[in-house]
Image 1 (cartoon, rainbow, N blue to C red):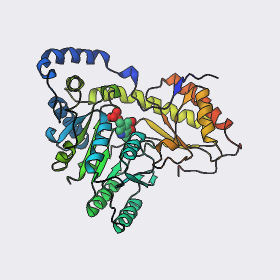
Image 2: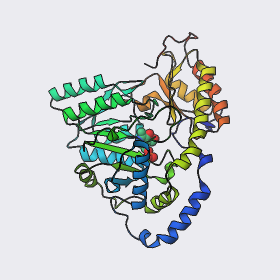
Image 3: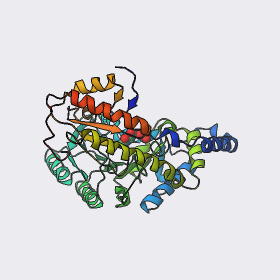
Image 4: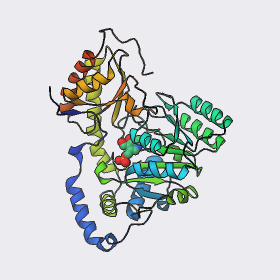
Length: 385
Ligand SMILES: Cc1ncc(COP(=O)(O)O)c(C=O)c1O
């Protein structure tokens, strides 16, 4: 037994071995020399123009739409975008927001701090369910508490890894427009894609100015850069900018990333994604070998997470302690539930572990799960829900 975590399936980080040290060093040297004067100034609300242009190009390549770089504001990771938009759209504490029943803990904690009343929308393999969205909107309208916005991680959802199909996106957009509710789409994992077609982002399907789009460099490059962005059109853009009081985000990091991505984000993604894909595949294989008789899990086509359903008879608090004592970390389902309900799931993040760690860690986790059950029965469910 050991308190040292050797197999950390907890955090959603990119792969350290593909971090482009030499290229970023060269970019840093160049931009410090060439942009020294600009670095002595405050960056301003929108931030480094070169990176905004590079991100507009990133979006154009993926979505086939043209973004005005002046409608992109650079943020301290996409998490700042989550908070800024929630602040901008809030009128008072207790305002409602629709959110996937299982969602990103950072967002949940931001909304909790702001005292939003979160309405959890059930998920299926296609993400947030439109029938439940419609029901909630109807009910809340009847109570004169229409949500201030709908928050969705529509692509490689965190924690499930699900992707919302195009048809469903259109349905949600139509509902949002019908009820006059903005959509905040968090595409933090965009471009971390492994196989199959790429579904379009919601903002690219409809140019309604109620749509707000959040994206990041954390998962395609590294979270330590703290670079993300919000794309919003006027007058929504001004509404969000009015909440910003920090004089802009890190100009040096933005300048280095802009130089690194001078020819697009594709070259690095072509190096990083196959490495991540191999880890996803190994994690799925390990789950099949170790837990196929008692668990069910998602098979994500992108992103960094696998969502695992546990048998009901697992003592979940004991599992977390037992696994950590055995050197394995993961995040329990409860961390993702909009009401912190102790649900029988756990999330595995595979991005930053080595193949060896994945290979060794999963059997240990599986033993811990079995040890924390009150029976040896085979699973009594076939799906994730
Ligand atoms: C859905 C989602 N949004 C936002 C974030 C925040 O990322 P960052 O601020 O590093 O861009 C994360 C990080 O895991 C996430 O999963």
